[in-house]
Amino acid sequence: MNYNKKTVKDVDVKGKKVLLRCDFNVPLAKDGSGVITDDNRIRAALPTIQYLLEQGAAVIACSHLGKPEPNFEKWAKKQAEKGKDASEEKWQKSLKELRMEPVAARLSELLGKPVVLADDVVGPDATAKAAALKPGEIMLLQNTRFEKGETKGDPELAKKMAGLTGTDGVYVSDAFGAVHRAHASTAIVADYLPAVSGFLIQKELEIIGGALAAPKRPLVAILGGSKVSSKIGVINNLLEIADTIIIGGGMAYTFSAAQGGKVGNSLLEEDWKDYANDMVKKAAEKGVKLLLPVDTVVADNFAADANSQVVKAGEIPDGWEGLDIGPETVKLYCDAVKGAGTVIWNGPMGVFEFPAFAKGTEAVAQALSETSAITIIGGGDSAAAVQQLGYADKMTHISTGGGASLEFMEGKELPGVACLLNK
Image 1 (cartoon, rainbow, N blue to C red):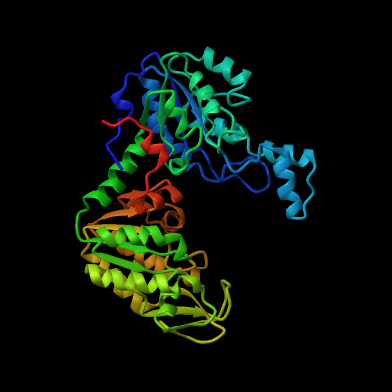
Image 2: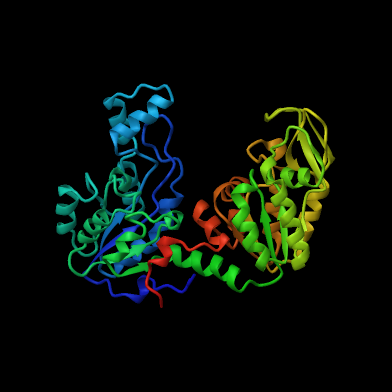
């Protein structure tokens, strides 16, 4: 995939209306109050927004928020399957809780200027407010997923969204967390407008794309998380370019079982044992170091206050389950990071949400914070762990996309990037 895409700095936006796709899919308080519990995604969009406004553009921002179901019949069917009440009133309430009002209010505070909020996405209110928008002003459309055609990549919806910009508009993509989806607002709209990246996507492409295409070596990839099956493509692709691959988290127990080890009640994907062995063989054939845990911290149940002990990998007693890498493995993995030129990390080493089983993840985060290597955190749980443990400011780059960064590392084409103009 071509990572060398045009950015907002390569187009003239003065006096033009710009449709800006952001990732404002922020976490909200679970009590339905609409309180934003983490505004990092809104803050991440500010450099692009401020640049466009300073250049004299009128900005029409848009984003999805959560997973609203715009079709009542589909929503009612899902509720019925869960044995829940499926009244139209509850459906309307579920949509109301995912409206963009809290995002518009927070964005307005951060920008220090009013943000005009539309009541719809491409309806009469959005159309009228977009037509009235002047250079240097910003508006926010309603949740894009309120439109039935959004997730289907409906060309008609994309055309209407593009139409909000008038006759000479520009599309700017800056929602890296959504570029792996060919939705109307993330990719299809580029069929109707010249499309470039914002600063957020530009940074992701330069740093992750650069690390995959021409890494400073040695390239060390640390892969954790729960399942081998979710990391197949990543492991396969990294075996072609990495010097060392480190396996941790729940997926390590499938590798251990594949080699004849006892894993007790640990997370195990029985159907993926052959695949795990194939990866071990492939690594040996390619001269890639594949490091697996040599010891593990086990617990007598899945709980923060469970009894725990350290055992050798492959020797987990019946009734116990692995919840973290052990101290010998911590040393092995941290030593592997020390001499690295580039480190890509995706997935925690254990159940970091439980303090007693966060030591492996914390040790790896600390090792990355102390290395002179380029350190890239691949979004999702790894990003959350680094933030939670206080090492975020020590990393070269923390990706804003979970699923998108995974597919990027798999070498897959990302529809929301492929649609942008090449330099």
